[in-house]
Length: 294
Image (cartoon, rainbow, N blue to C red):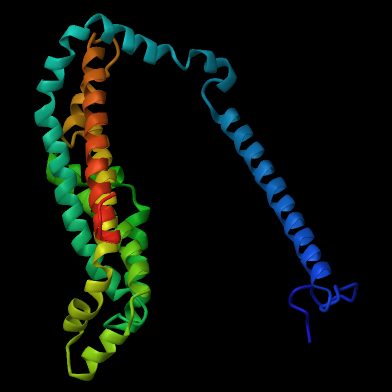
């Protein structure tokens, strides 16, 4: 019989009765494998760095001293016009509200799609077990395509505005949350599902009454976390004409426009918004998962 731990080759093997020798041999092997992986990682990093440096239009080391030039220009101009910052922040609040609305609607639509996809793609719960690979590959495809690519395609179909942004973010959210929801559902206790099946409950009833009450806290926690991510995504999509505060930021960051005070105001507004959303969602995630607020 082949020794799966040490291979078919003959050679010295630790005495199973000697626990210390076996432990030390295991440690040596782990260190050897760790060293090999470290060497491979360093080699890949070096080759990737060399390739990037060769294909770069400039030079990394030559441009490194100038990396702070643009931020310094932005903040110096904003400091000179610091008295205008409160008014600029107030002027961009409507665009921020549009950005948050895009993220909220996209998160809701994506989460509902993820719920259906995850239950249909979970082993032991799927209504059509043979179609599990189809639903899993669908979620993989939705996650693989970046939101900005979907948005650029939809712009040609629907025109600019918040609707393409909502669809693009919702599709990516459905794939990302579907994967997370499915992993949570796989750990659900099947006894309630089996009990409901024994009394003639339909598949929808088994999922609604037997599975969703178990996974709802974790699902809601993941959805709240995804909402934070989608606020950032909706701001980025504004750069390609999808509206919201990202569009204002793109216009303000044009070189030589003398509007860097607006850039700082928008960044401050986004930062405060993300912090507030993070605090609120963190509070409710703890409340949902642990039953009490931190």
